[in-house]
Length: 326
Ligand SMILES: NC(=O)c1ccc[n+]([C@@H]2O[C@H](COP(=O)([O-])OP(=O)(O)OC[C@H]3O[C@@H](n4cnc5c(N)ncnc54)[C@H](OP(=O)(O)O)[C@@H]3O)[C@@H](O)[C@H]2O)c1
Image: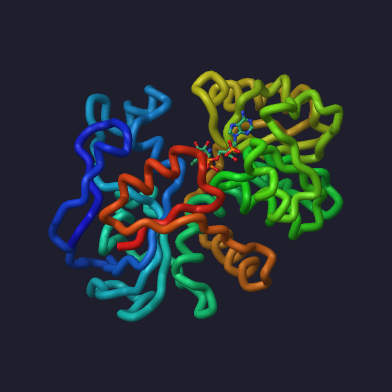
C-alpha cells in the first residue's frame, strides 16, 4: 500500500509517499481502507515540534514514529480473529493519536477500540474532520470538574477559524450560548458564517482589553498569560487553553490551577483530553445529525500530494479542514 512516511524532523518536504506492506489484522485489530483523512495542527507539530521538550517523548534526534496522520475514515476491509464489534464493509472513523498514527495511507490497522461507526447519513469526508479537532472542541468546553457551557453564557473562542475553533463555535451556539470568535481579518466572514454573534479581529484588537467579560474562554493557541486572561473572565468563569508557546503551556498548567484556587474561577491548560472518547464521539454524531454541527472542508489533496496538503494547512490560508484522499 502507499503511505506517507518520514525519517527526520523538518518541514512538510521531509515527507514522502512510498510503498509499504499492507498490514494483516491480528487479535482484535481491524484493517480499514481509508477513503478520507484530515490534517490537524498536531500533524504539523509532530513534523517539526514547536516544543523541544516533547522530543523527550517522540524521539530526541529523529522521530520514533515514521508514519503520519491522525484522522481517518473508511471502510473495514478485514478483521482479526478476536474482533467482535466490526465486520467487513462497515464504515468507521478514528483518531490514531495513541495508535501509532498512519492515517495518510491507503489502509490503517489498529485495535477495534480505536474505531467508531460512521452513521449512514454522514459522508466519510465529513466524518474524517471530526475525530481529533471536534473532540478537542467538545472537551475544551467542559472543565476538568465537569462544569460546561450552558444557555445564555457569554463564550469567547480564541482561534475560531482553525481546525478546532469552528467546532467550538458551533457547539457553544448549539447550547444557546452567546458566542464571540477571535480570528484574523481575512477570516472574520468564516467565523460569522459559523453563527458567531460577534467577531474580534486579533490583528487590530486585543481581546484581553476589549472591556467585555465572559463566562467561558476557550483559547485554542494561547498568546496571553492566565493572569491577563483572568481580567476578562466573570467571577466563577472558566478559561481553558489548548496549547501555545512553551512558557504559556507551563503558565496554564502551573499558574492556572493556583489562580483558580485563589479566585474561584476555573483556569487551566486542558490536561484532561481523552482522544476519541466514545461519549463525546456519540455526542458529536448527534450534533451533526441534528444539523447543529456542520463540518467545514476547505480542500482535498490526493495522497501523492500530501506534502502540499501539509504545506497548505501550515500556511494558515485554509478556511476549513484540509483532507488527504488516498
Ligand atoms: N491540550 C491537549 O490535550 C491538546 C491535545 C492536542 C492538541 N492540542 C492543541 O490544540 C490546538 C489545535 O488548534 P487548531 O488545530 O485549531 O489550530 P489551527 O488550525 O492552527 O488554528 C489556529 C487558530 O488560531 C488563530 N490565531 C492565530 N494567531 C492568533 C492570535 N495572535 N490571536 C488569536 N488567534 C490567533 C488562527 O486564526 P487565523 O487563521 O485567522 O490566523 C486560527 O483560528 C493546538 O494548540 C494544539 O497544540 C492540545
